[in-house]
Length: 115
Length: 509
Image (tube, each protein chain N blue to C red):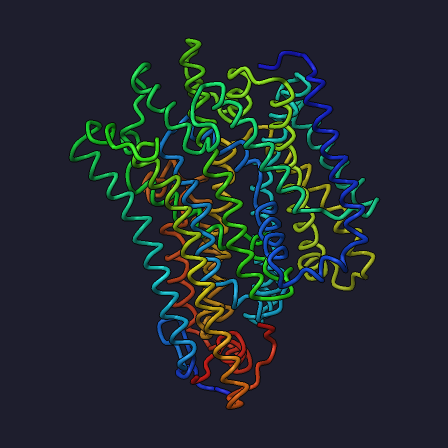
């Protein structure tokens, strides 16, 4: 059925249907992990520097690198890859389940999507 | 300073590499059907990822990043985090949904979603502006490499580099050679990492993984030469770091040529996994790039050379300097030059062709010649390609920053304009044409304000730094779009229905 009232429109903060709600929930989790890691690591490095100056940061070496270089330069890109893998695994499982449900109960035809 | 000497061996490596790409492109043309049979397989996804990474790698990644590290130390980590973290945004918020619109370019998407020719034309103009700015960074990289290869000054090198680029596009176009992105990525990664492994091996560091091995150089610089790497925010503020980082991330999710990648893969699941592989391949370069900046500093310190502070040319050429001062054989330096040329050429050629296509299909028939035939449009595209190449060449004569900084400005424009328009277009059906037109104009104003009135209104430069304006700019633009959309008529029921039902899966499973 065609929707005509803008009040019935979905949005990121107002997802409609169980499928979209669960997808948005996962997106929010992934984005929380993304944001906390980026801001958290920098605040951590900033606080270390402002509280202990270079004394501590010089001594904090991890896998051959100063801790702030390792956290931002090595771990964060790796963390982004892990987040993307987690999202894709969830999306794959979710789309397989949806596909099975739609085949079993003929909930709604899948048009325009080739997943 | 140019030494007036032509470096023949590196030149031969560069020529050989482009000949390889051309030959492979000609073979690739006749194997398109085979490529399609790979879809859905493990190899196919790695190939898609290599294509994404190859499309992404430019002079900014290959040359610029090491230059910023050399000059600004830890601050440059904002580039590493920004240029990788943006792919998370792209994947979770846009990659799946954007394909369901079935539109191939940013103006196509805007025109369809917002049902407005004006919004579409504005999006095309913005895409061209982004292309021009991004290409200035690439032309600067090409010119610095040409300057080193032929031993000539920077300005003549810009002209020679532009001529070479235009010739490359014309010849490969005339021969019908398609770009083999997988091959190109693997050439890029080898030309970048092999010399780095050789450098760290010569220094006696952990050379098998030079991405970690260069840490010993940081220690040596601190202990023996007093370089202070241990205070990450000594010369910058936390806000400046985060503003740059988030600007680059928003820009990554808003760059037209990055967004278009998702339409080129037949299967959405492969497109998503291709992003993961692409991010891994991109990270391989970014894990390594800081090492060149740090090692160059170490070699200079050991040789008693002063830091080339203020010399942006020297900083942007620091990858070559590190290899030369490190005593690598000339063929290894040639590999770096060939990789840098390849990255800058492919990015520039792709962007300029996309920009000229955007002009000929979105602007020329709408604003200049409404009754243009298909052949007129093709002619317009070719003419506009040359005009853009010349415009970028002139802008590259006097660049306003380091390669990475110029590229960051392009990301800031994309983050302030295209990113909010796509994000709200996908996730908020109520967003309408009036809202996005006002939003895109606001985004342009925010992006260019520090350039034109930053000196007379200093607060603007502090809030919206030229390279970092989208951190606050993108939320401001979204606010403008939301407010203007709510105060004006909603989009048609058809497009809202399309977003509600076709773009998002609202079934009660």
